Image (tube, rainbow, N blue to C red; front, side, top):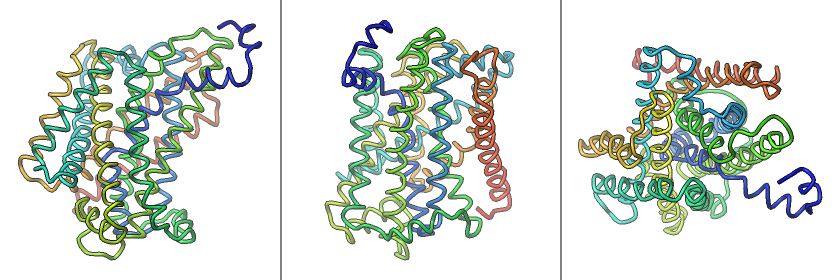
Length: 416
């Protein structure tokens, strides 16, 4: 659309046109409400009440900044973040970088598949291993939508599942609202022992997800192209801010709802340190409908997020190694470790939380190059980060890296 035609269009037409350009951030947002978030947030609320509300808020603000910078990278440079890393790295560095990214992808898929299996067990009493297989098969179907019909139909399906997730987890707040004063008190940053630090790191690892930092750059580029500097690019960047803002607001509300529900309903109760126990307690305290909605939300979360994770893994491999593996094959490869965990009978909730800690270790490898590239005027031109944006982005990277160092210490000393 030319500038003159756009100027003659009505405000309604311009708003509708802008709305049609939304979508990539909502796919990325699925990673922020995945089963790992459910495990971490419910554990945090059940064990520490409202203490870690501030972590949810902080993580969501950080995620919004990170996802916008990722989308901007793809729109301005015409390349995904993995492709830029490949261009700037030697062969050995690329291989090492890919190895850690694949480890993150496996940890991601572990959380998603285990979460889907738990949900199917809660809803239909399906054995966990069988539930993991069903989750893998359904996610393959979702990936085939992207592979055969393109990105936009995939975005619509995933956004629909995001709506189901939101209903599933927000419902409890309407059934039994928590205390606003207690929730507000949780906005004051503080910890209560090593366990709360471990959970905070897991919550951030579950919120600022490295695989969607890589994915969003490629999705924005594939959806909108690589516009030349000028009004078209400025408009797309402005719409991308709204896309990210709306998506992160929804994801943040869902995450906060999980923690508030657990703090209000599960705090001080025995046997709620697992998702299954939390579901049973919610059903008992708030009624069967609340329990059903929680399980349905968890199932939608597992199905959608495992599909997005496999999609991200394929984009990472393509960008870093220039090796293309069909999405369905990727789905099978990353599904196997999750099925092994389920077959061995490892506590699924514990596996979910540990997977989020592993994810937190991968975040600096995504954030540091992202900040470097978006702060490079030669690469970004007039769309280079402003000084305040760069400072905030480095602060985010430093906070997360610092938490990782604390986590390593707690793990080595056995305090976690």
